[in-house]
Amino acid sequence: MILYPAIDLKDGQAVRLLRGDMDKATVFNDDPAAQARAFVEAGCDWLHLVDLNGAFAGAPVNAAAVEAILAACDVPAQLGGGIRDMATIEGWLDKGLARVILGTVAVENPALVREAARAFPGKVAVGIDARGGKVATKGWAEETDVDATDLARSFEDAGVAAIIYTDIQRDGAMQGPNVEATAALARAVSIPVIASGGVSSIADLVALRDCGASLDGAISGRALYDGAIDLKEALSVLRG
Image (tube, rainbow, N blue to C red; front, side):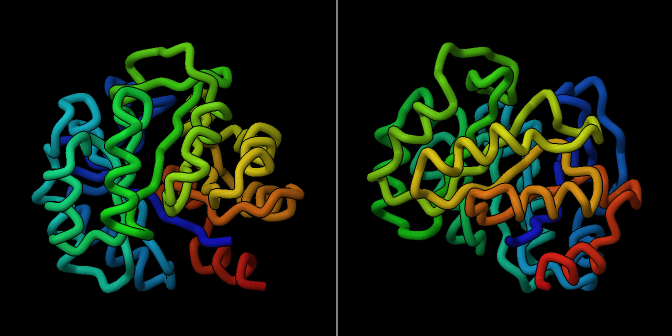
């Protein structure tokens, strides 16, 4: 199971939000590229990047910070937030991103997800962010009636590389991930699932790894910044 250190970008800084609330942002590093280098030096295999401003704006906002990270690091990175058309997808992949994450458009324009997954095999993931099992979009600001599992199943034949499932109520709250819901989603689809939201200890990572469903990875942010998880130790545990 791959551990993805998260770098959430707001106004050019690396931050963490509490349950997706932009007004509850803690700045952890004003040099996101330096933060990325620190994660890479600790041994991570991937980086997970989020353009928080972009998620609300519907277009890339923190492009300079993302490009600085890509220039500074030699591990693959995935990015979500504000990626809502083919030109933006192509642009990011051309700049060296290994994978784009499509969230809002997965609900509003699923045909784009399918088109992108066909055009860029292995480089398109779907981000499913749920509150109480229902999908939220546009930076989690808008609620929908779409069931998270139904949305995941709808892309079963689309060729997407992964589903990143975030439990919004757990995100940034340091209360542990929703192992049960994540495992249920992973069992419902054949697409690789990456868990996100609430991972606050190595025990949480082990619980996800051993949940009885084959999870492809887990994302952690605040716990790494706070020191609740030592990245080197966590990677060692997960690699066995």
